[in-house]
Amino acid sequence: MAASVAEYIAGFEGLTRERLEDLRELVLGILPDAVEGVSYGIAGYKINGKPVVYLGGFTGHVGLYPVTALPEDLEKQVAPYRSGKGTARFVNTEPLPRDLIEELVRFLANRAAS
Image 1 (cartoon, rainbow, N blue to C red):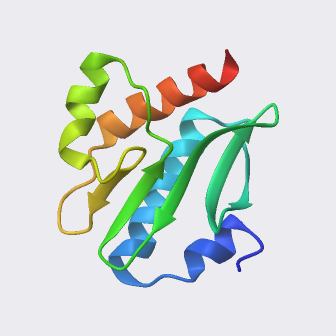
Image 2 (image 1 turned 180 degrees about the vertical axis):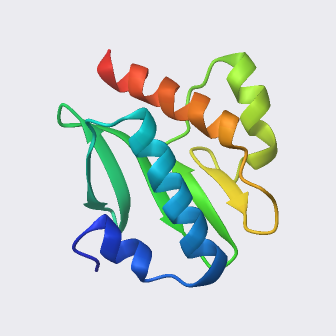
């Protein structure tokens, strides 16, 4: 198992690696004070010791977790990317929906803070 997020990302090749690097940069841009680490075998970000979001890489996609209990308007936007109850899955053959991911990470951070 990877000891750091950088090591976790380095374990991938091609598009999955590029997309994980993009997601990492995006998350840290939104949550500059987040502490990153590897938990549950994937990259994770915490604020004040509370988990906010996890990033997972796979052969054909990347995923964000936990994406549960969203407001209706946000759920409608995330619905096309749903892969299971708590997963937003972004296939490597399509562009990352950066605006949606930013909105989602902000929502998850606000939820973790409350």
